[in-house]
Each structure stands twice: as structure tokens, then as C-alpha cells.
Image 1: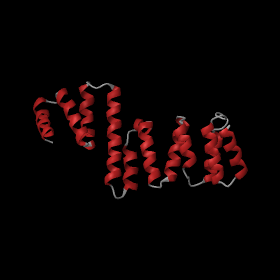
Image 2: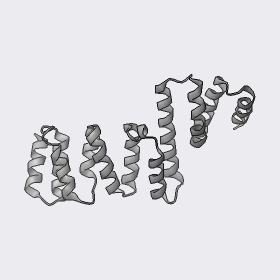
Image 3: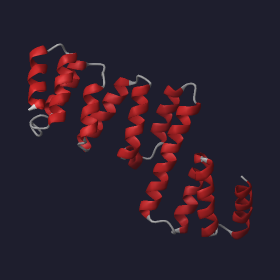
Image 4: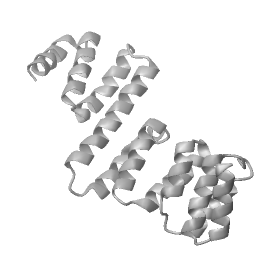
Length: 189
């Protein structure tokens, strides 16, 4: 914190010197002050000392840090979590490194319908086996429609064991015992 005070003073005196910005970034990361780090992003971008990959990594760290902070501190996490997601830039909403912890948080809160919708949208854009498996474990609002959506993926990926397992789980939820057995056996083979 003493370092932060000195760096803040140095930042005012040196007109946004790149070394001061770098050190401020390290201090804010160390203090886990994600909001201040977020405020520093435009200046970091202007300095052009950070590569696009480094900026993406920093933005991702900020988003994940804010999510962790929400998890720890918020009493009404449902609305705060939704607000956090809506404010997140679109590129981070498509980033698997951000989506995965967000999905875990949704499931931990019992927000199965939101988790199912997010998984469905993401699987249209990017096929990831972990998401397919999660899709079979999420209890969406309409189990029959969830099964139909998953079955629509089958023609493109008919030998995918994770998809077949997911279809078996969804068939069980819909009480389609014979169909579930066929999917489970196909997945096992």
C-alpha cells in the first residue's frame, strides 16, 4: 500500500510514464484491486508497451478477479453476477477461460436455465467436450427441448462418446429408458 501511494504520486508527476504504469499494474494485481486496474486499462493501451496478447491476458485476469470478488463478497449474488456478465466486453464473453468459471458459478447458484442457455449458445460457436458434458448435467427448464438440441448435434458428431453420454443423460431425464440405454451403450463402445 505504501508502494501504491508512492506510485500514484509518481504517476501524477511523470505524466503517465510507462514504467510507473507497469509498476502500478503489478501493485494493483498484488492488492487484487480489480476495479482500479480496470480504470488503468485505457492508459496502458495508450502507452503501447503492452502486446495485444498481454492486454487480453490482463483483461481476462481483471474479469476473473472481479468474478472471484463477487463470489466472496456479494449477498445478492444473482443480480450482481448477471450485471457483471452484461458489463463484460463481448470478446471476453466468448473467451473459454472466462466462460468456464462463470458457468461453474451459475451452477453453484442453481441457475441451471441460464447455464443451459449459455452452453447452447457457446456450443453453436465452438465445440468443446467439457461444455457438451456439462450440457448433459445441467437441468434446463425444458428437458425435452434440451434433448432435441443435443440430438441435432448428432449428425455431425455421431461417434463422439461425450455427446452420446450427454444424450443418454438427457434421455434419462426425459424418462426415455430404451433410448438412454442405446446412447449409453454407444458411448461405451
